[in-house]
Length: 143
Length: 69
Image (cartoon, rainbow over all chains, first blue to last red; front, side, top):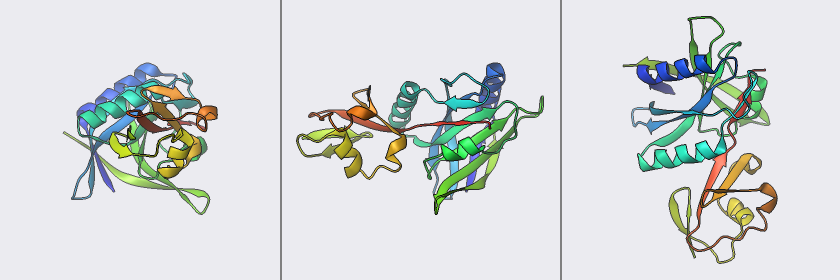
């Protein structure tokens, strides 16, 4: 699946993730699954990491609920979530895989490992015969 | 009675509990689901005993978390 995210939304999460360091930052993504097969992120939600650590994140469920309601009232579909890895690469950790329980979601990971060179990747994670299977999705930053 | 589940209005049996609704809705990986009724979060231990009422608004939220390790 090809996913698009607007430059402006990328900039917002990057800036927020930088400000949250050393903690992980997180949020949700919403938009449309278009008929041409493109998953278009139309809105990015910046939410609170209630763990407040550099090794874990938990999205505040109250904020999650408000975001879901906002998506619904704006005709947007929940598409998944995003979080930062302040000191590690942009790939799902074992814990990310274990806690990824929505096979329809896209999981975006923003690595801040290299100063000034953020890396954002998207992943599909699902249970296949009791094992978590990870597939990288094509992600494009658009104007 | 009529309730709203995930923004959709549904007709369900009177006396339906949150636990029974989770089963009825075929919720994927229910152990990782948080439930709110009228924007109040319900403790997992209370799912079986929480009886829904006419007009309730129910949301199923997947736990969203992870880690860098």
